[in-house]
Picture 1 (cartoon, rainbow, N blue to C red):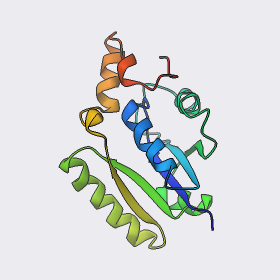
Picture 2 (picture 1 turned 90 degrees about the horizontal axis):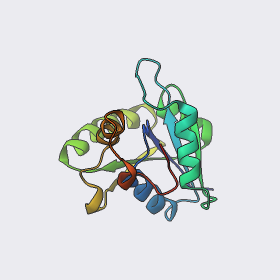
Picture 3 (picture 1 turned 30 degrees about the horizontal axis):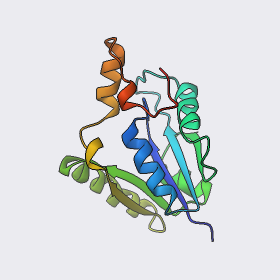
Picture 4 (picture 1 turned 60 degrees about the vertical axis):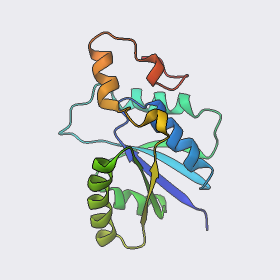
Length: 152
């Protein structure tokens, strides 16, 4: 059985922290799907197609990493993709508490799907898409926080 993991998120934009987690996960799984959650009630800075392009550019040389979009429950998407793992990154204890609650609910919805947490590398612990988005919106240079192949 192929080991498929879903790494869901908004990736608005993808950061070097995301890139680091996804590359590390790609060594653990046969396939990692970076799944951009589409939420019609949430205002994104970048369109879904722009975010897909940024992620594809980031992992162009990694054949076991792909990108997709989805709507609805992550567990439903996992079942559709025959994935038995959900990956989540943890920067701090606040992330852990939030992600633990979601993981517990997902387990009740789909006990065959495990949520696995990867801690961020120390240099990315303070990095978030929200902060990078604010830098972009206010005309700053976000390039040191974005994967090398991503231009915004």
